[in-house]
Structure formats: structure tokens, C-alpha cells
Length: 261
Image 1 (cartoon, rainbow, N blue to C red):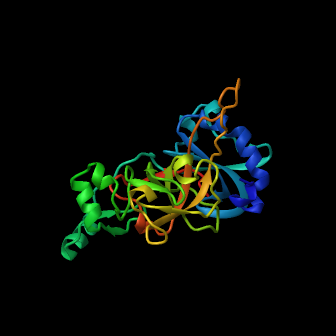
Image 2: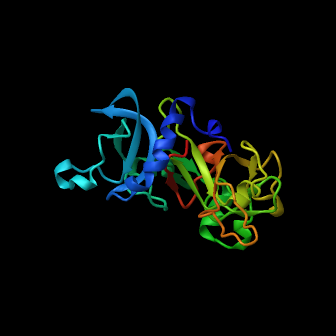
Image 3: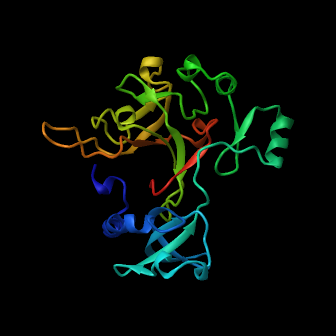
């Protein structure tokens, strides 16, 4: 994949600096991700491009040693620190107001990452109550981690989890994704960005276009082992942007996709 497919032009010069400094930043306490964005001061966007350190909790400087603090600049590029909370999988109980709304409407529902009420259809409700191989291979809305999914040209695989942008690029709307393997969503490198993803996967009865829940967004290319060479991949991973936030994000909830934009 070419960088221009996934990174806005104005951020490409920063991307190389992020790549070289990311490991050192991630080694600091509290840092859970590194992204590209704009510098904020007192909650206001300065419009200046920055390397953004995502932390689970923003701490006062006097509680951090000098070595643990995020430097003000990296290679003359401003930095910013944004609090994103603890990143974890799992659904949360409905807030009292949403729970009341769901009860009044007679809905089986869950809360998405943006605080909206998501109705569970009959298949999703049944799957939550009776998880098994047959329910996981069925059509479920909203989809969630563990169910059948796949690129439209493969057999079927497993949806790993649902995620969203922790810090989207300024001016770019927050996006929602499903996360799985390259060989599931990207057809072992043979797919094109934008290809449809079906739930359930084709082997389990998914058809195009009726069962499209996402479109391939990014993947880590698989570097297949050659004779006498050590495999180079650390991950087998891909993300696909959900066609709508309500089509995904079932019982496992939304995780956080750091720097997915």
C-alpha cells in the first residue's frame, strides 16, 4: 500500500518522524499510542501539526521524572499529549438514562462508544444469550468479535474485535472499524483498499451486497517466508471501515484503534 492511500498529504512528512520515535515514546509510562494530529493548547486547536502521544491518564509534570515526560518537540516537530483512557475490550452497562430509554421502548440494546443507543436485532440477542458455533456463523447485527466474517473472495474467518479512531486527523470524522487478520480481510495481500467485507463470510452464506458490513481500509502486508529466510512479520492484521457504526460493535464493545486514520 502507498502512504498516500491512508495519510493526508500534509501529514506525510511527520509520518516518518513518528515511525522512528514511536518505540521510544511507547516505552514511557502511561503512553498507550502515538498518532499524528494538531497541537492543542487549553483545549483549543492551534492548527500546528504535531506528533501526538496518547496516554491513559494525563498526569501533572511534577509527578513524572524528566525521562518520563513527553518532550515539547521531537526533531523540531511540536508534540501534544491527549488523554484517551484505559484501552480495553468489553462492553459497559447502559448509562441510567439510556437504560430507561431502552426499557421504555422495550428494546434489547447496548451503548456504543459515542454514547448512542444501539438496538440488538433478534440474531444478535440470540447470539448474546446462546453463544455457539452455529450462532457465530450466522448473520448478526450489530456484529461483534468472534462471529464469521471475510473478504468477499475468501471462505470465512473470524472478526477479532470492533474499534474506532482514538484520535482522528483534524477535520476527518471519527471512523469505526472491524479488526481481523490480513488473510481474513485482505485475502493474503491480494485485496484492494475498499473491497467489501461480508458478515457472515462467504463460506457461511454471506453474499454481496446484502451482507456487506465494512470495506477494507488498511492491512499489514504479509511477507511470506522464502527458503532460508526468517519470517519478517510480527502481526497478521487488517482493519476494515464499518459501513455504519450500527452495523458493528456488539457484545464485546468498541476497543480503541490508535491512529487508525
